[in-house]
Amino acid sequence: MTTTTPQVGKRRKKGRGVLGNSGLYVAVGIAALLFLIPFYLIVRNALSTDLEITGENWKVLPSFQWGNISELFDDPTVEFGRSMVNSLIVAVSATLGTLLVCSLAGYGLARIPYKHADKVFYAVLATLMVPTAVTFVPSFVLVSSLGWVDTYRGLIIPGLFSGFTCFLFRQYFLGFPKELEEAARVDGLGYWGAYWRIVVPNSLNFFAAIATITFISAWNSFLWPLVLAQDPSSWTVQVALSSFITNQTVNFHLIFMAAAISILPLVFVFLFLQRWLVQGIAQTGIKG
Amino acid sequence: MSTTTTRGVAQPAPAKASKARPRRGLRGNPTFNFWLFTGPFLIGLVIFVFVPIFWSVWLSFFDARYTVTPSHFIGFDNYKQILTNSGFPDSLLTFSVFAAFIVPTTWALSLGLALLVHRLRFMRAFFRSVFFLPTAVSYVAASLIWKMSIFSGVRFGLMNTFLGWFGVENIAYLANPSPPWYWVVIVSLRLWIQSGFYMILFLAALQNIPGELYEAAAIDGAKPGWQTFRYITLPQLRATSTAVILLLLIAAYQAFDEFFNIITLKATWAQTPLMELYKTALGTNQDYGAGSAGAVILSLLICLVTLIQGKFMGFGRGEEGK
Image 1 (cartoon, rainbow over the protein chains, first blue to last red):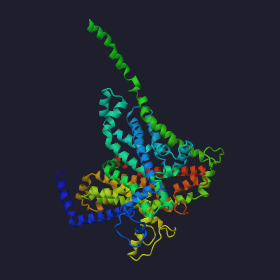
Image 2: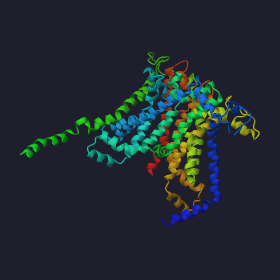
Image 3: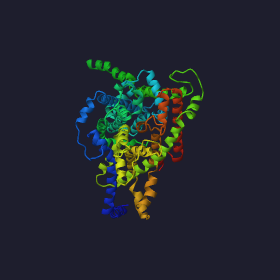
């Protein structure tokens, strides 16, 4: 073993000469450029005049119309600011609610010895087979009969009970070192106390990963808000954007500015929390 | 004396406390705690997942136009109607074409990116971020860029400008269904958004392949490159590949956002299953019965695909087995 490893190391280094390596970087660089073009386009168009977007003389750099930002938010016909606030409220509450409800359930399923826990777990697993996107018709029927159309409740609450997130938490807690909790139980804490004082503080990485994933999907979700938010004052940012695309009531530069602003918070969240996000996906994304 | 009395008084107290402790507030009772932890979730799951599913199955056997509390039982008529008298069968065809494009291309691109990034020594985190970043973008925002900037169909749209350098005539990507250029728009958009996510899955799997396998192969005379990829990397990635393909299929079934914004509901072509359900149930007819029948059919199809794939490719089991 010890003799073969260095040999292979040498052979690998040889095989990957200056040329091979630079070829690799050229390939990755071209792919990266292609992946970045849409980001460039959205920023460029957001800071252009309409003529620069549709006109004949394509310029690489826009004329940096920073006034487009205030024009968008001041436009009384659009309510874009309102939709941003709606999205923020919905996405933050959905994230906190999902973390609370699903983590507790996942812990209960993983750790508390209850004789019918298996049956309950199978019932949760069964819901994974039917994707929520397919059940939007009956869900809409239910939520509208509760009178929740056009409300934050309707936008937030039905999404909290994700069988998949509960499942991920269960898998995670199964792998959580049992000794820590047992020590806490011996010291007189109940399940509830052990959970909040020992388990949660030691699982913040995992919670951060799930929070990031939940926040992104809540912010970006479109079908459910489209179905549910019928009054423009309850539109989320995705519904508002879509109404610009399909109706074209707004000018090009305002549409692109709206899209850029809708992406911006997420890109920041994304870059900032990426470590946890990647970890979380790699750990839990599919292995269960 | 005083000490003994205090002891005598004090003694039963701890005994009582220790006896009572497990019961006090039901702290140690597993059954109580189980429901304390999972109860809220289960109540929500029943109300917002199980009730809609069963309600949907029930509605699908009733004449339920404009109403959700129907009284007229019509058996399988809703199923007949949605399968013969609507765009639903065509939408299943649209899905099949879409899946045939998007599943293999995303699989290949995300695996390719993972292999490239995996080999990088410098700036690995940077390139990984670049490919992963589109995951943050919504399909709605991406639809906007694709429809109004890259594939706007006018002469100065980005793609037509680019093709113009090679003397290609203007292409109207979205104006009409034949030739079906719209597939280029839809597929490239989804490739851009989702490849980075699956790349992360492949990267994680690549890191888990034991290095000894490559060493052993090198000793056996396998050439690095295609041979090791074909006989070591690919088989080792089998479990991940299977899961990725399944996830891609399910995601393709549920395609809605970009089709809704780029193709729009008004078009008579390229309507996905969810768009048809949206039109049937929430359009002018508000036919919840036929809409529910469609939802039931789709759910059954997804379950069927999942089970078949699980049977043939051993979904998720490959890794544990080895």
